[in-house]
Image (cartoon, rainbow, N blue to C red; front, top):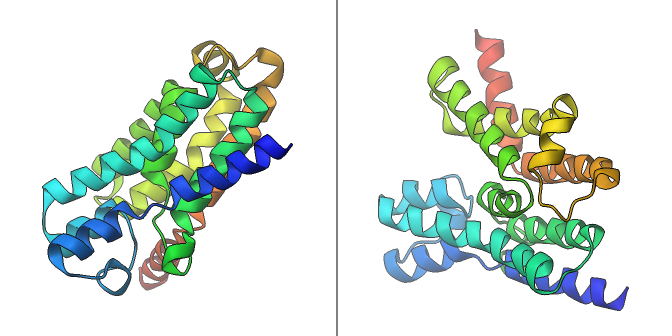
Amino acid sequence: MITLILTCIVFYLIGSIPAAYLLVKRKYKKDLTKEGSGNVGTLNTLTVSKSKTAAVFVLLIDFLKGAVPVYFLIYVFNLSVNFVFISSVFLIIGHNYPVWLKFRGGRGLATGAGIFSVLNILLLFTWCTLWLIYFFLIKKDVLAANLTATLLFPFFTLVFKGVYIHSVNPLLLINEYYLFVIFSFIISFLILSRHKEVFTKLKLSQQKS
């Protein structure tokens, strides 16, 4: 239990490293929390800095914040799946609500993608497919595509149970499948919690139409 608590604290601190904020502040002398959408993530980095290179760099760092810690827990320290699930949640919490920025962070998409790239790559591909379908066939709105894909992707672990069990990390045993489903919904909820303004925007657009 002590090891788990310490790991959760460390993972929160790793997740809370504000790569976007630090890069834009140092290189462009701008405060991401006060410009653009106020979000400390890839999209607002692109909006404020007007630099695709900066945005890609932030995307990569935030992705690695999710992938590397989870990889170490599984392949280096050989810890249990339950341990990995609980700890991973704190990577997202740290990224979305960093204490250094008065709990104003990113949306957790890149960090979540990093986590699932290690746990279940097929689920990550599912999210990407849903995103592409919405963006190119329904509406070219990045935030709305993010919201829709994130809202739907955990349900695919229920619809295609057998497929996801066989594609998941081998350490995830079949009898732990439902824990994985719960974990997927929790991650989805944490990401959606940072999309409140997107919900409001979509609601207003529907009312006008």
